[in-house]
Image 1 (cartoon, one colour):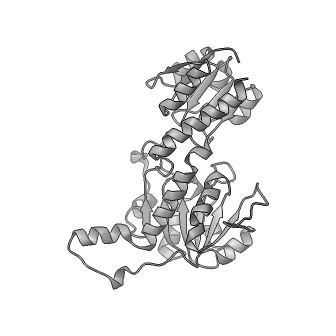
Image 2: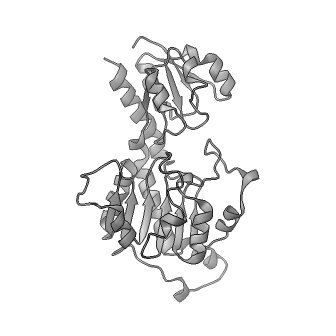
Image 3: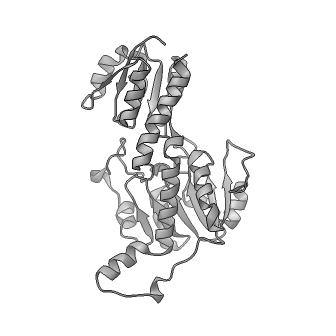
Length: 316
């Protein structure tokens, strides 16, 4: 590719810009630019770097007449019209390799915290309350942990679980033949029959939107614990709340919520329904603000992975 300009629509670790400039690209970063401004200048750039600030769709992509690549600083691609980009000859890169370990570690950390009541007991001890028998935990060892979606984060989660002596199984509609020492590939029927813990590691698509709902939960033979570090709208929140109330779901670890703003930077505080208000009062629910893939290490790795992919594609 001839030298050209790259627009950083969102922030990224400095390593990405440094590596792009070493490749001969000129980088602009306009953090205050809104969608209309980006549409106006889109034709000047051969590359876009984005997280989740805006949607790169039919309003923008046709205006980006020189665009050769889009680099998504993260794993999910739901804010990019990938089909349209490909039709326009634009390559799309993401970096699930960069934050898979961070997501996997947080999923395990949240599960351990939930199983051992760590948030509750910390608060109790700080307030002079000393309850031992009422705070007995349960162990991961011997539990059947089912992973839905066996890509980068699903695989990393299974690997991190390998020392806990759990029975780790996984289902992926689009991937087969991945059984190894960390995981056993199964069909959904076995997950419905045997799972104690269900962990979602899928992208948000038309197929996975509200994948978890009351009908889905009813198929499980046993009450389950649920982990979601993928996207909020994979779970139907009212159905999750009703399942928690009925005991069909014993507890939940949620790093993502369906009520996040498009950018994932905040909650839509003016649009929170009763289901969310119930959820945040439940002691068997652990919440975090979409930070599972947001470690200091992953910040660097996301940028470096993207730089390596762009170099491989365009630098001869």
